[in-house]
Image (cartoon, rainbow, N blue to C red; front, side, top):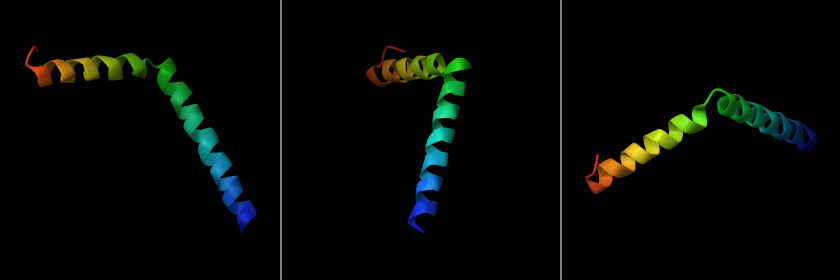
Length: 47
């Protein structure tokens, strides 16, 4: 039972790392930063 949980954890960790790398290659980081900046500007009343 414990070995099965460890395998599932490793597979999920590898899948999450893969998806993060794919997102970074697609430019997702800049999209997130741009949206965060716009939201912050709206919160303080500039945007």
